Length: 277
Image (cartoon, rainbow, N blue to C red):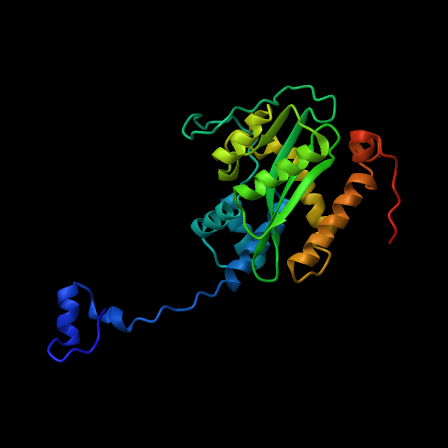
């Protein structure tokens, strides 16, 4: 737009275009995200151990225990980008109806007695050497069995609809699916998919991660028992580790809730399956 001109000087061209001449010489600095990734790694690890921590306490822990110089505003920004928040057992003070697709929490005091009565769906970060990938999973509340999961390098509505369709195709339709109020679960594609299959929609109260505690506990097990112990450098290796762990979790890992039997046994009667090393 601005170039050498036989009659118009650079200064005059800037005046005519109403722009600051100094902007012509500005070279944008390359953004270094290594620090951001490192901090998000720590937030993911701390939150997995202490899901009750909100951004205020998370800021204190990062500064005190990890010597990370960060303020509350930045911690809150990162936690929001990671779609995580502290568990809040208090009353739900959010106002329903502010978003087009908000639904009430249907599971309070519900007696869940059989498989496919209630499923929970959620997304978690899986850290990579540079950045993150996103894992969506659906867990059956009664048996704690993982009925479907999908790994993606983007967190969008397509990830959610794919995992729901996979679960329904493999195991049939549940009576209810519960989620949080994240944007992936309050979009037309997700709501329409559940409604078209006759599935009742349940959502946690705002800031009440305890409402979806079933899958929160699974994320903790996956990360501490597998992902934090293994080395991987790409999505293919991460997917292999997740496949291995979920097979183990469903079919081999004794579950205290069920007198140390397995989720698979409770879900559809599969006996103990020994997996070769």
